Amino acid sequence: MRIGVLALQGAFIEHIAMLRRIGVEAVEVRLPEHLDGLDGLIIPGGESTTIGKLATAFNLMEPLKAFGREKPIWGTCAGAIFLSKDAHRSQPLLGLMDITVERNAFGRQIASFETDLVVEALETVEPGGPPFPAIFIRAPLIESVQNGTRVLATLEDGRIVAAQQGHLLATSFHPELTKDDRFHRYFLSLVNSD
Ligand code: GLN
Image 1 (cartoon, rainbow, N blue to C red):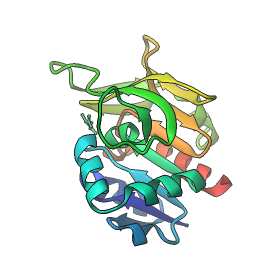
Image 2 (cartoon, rainbow, N blue to C red; image 1 turned 45 degrees about the vertical axis):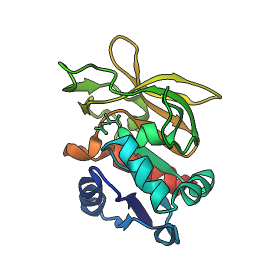
Image 3 (tube, rainbow, N blue to C red; image 1 turned 90 degrees about the horizontal axis):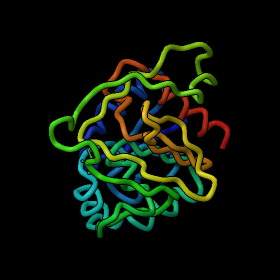
């Protein structure tokens, strides 16, 4: 199995390190040809406007859309914004996932925080595991999901922070910044079953 990590900007090194730690071949993706032969792709957190501008400049928009129609993509934070259909403003988006996101939804004062999330879907990778330690950094909210997109995790007040639509996965938070590899293993299970 070979997983690519979009390496234009943001926390791509941490995703690659996590993938390698769980024994998966991980490669950096900067150009369209780097997508060849990959089984799945992770789009990291960072700044979604910058990722979108660079993806446009490197002619990656169409190849990424085509890849996501066929193969699993997981977007974390800015990556989730980039996967979405609607971010309430004009910026390059892949528009692959039927989710509407609200950027920087937590305001400046509490822009970054950590909280434990109950994520039932992770039972498939580790039955009876503890809540997931989720790190939010100027994070987006998944305001709404459409067309059968499944909500995977919410905050205690019900606001959505993880969703899945077939082989597409979006998380508002950063599993690659924790020691907990269950979300990465969950994504790999989507790659394996695709
Ligand atoms: N605030 C960033 C954005 O809107 C996302 C932050 C992150 O990826 N940690 O794109």
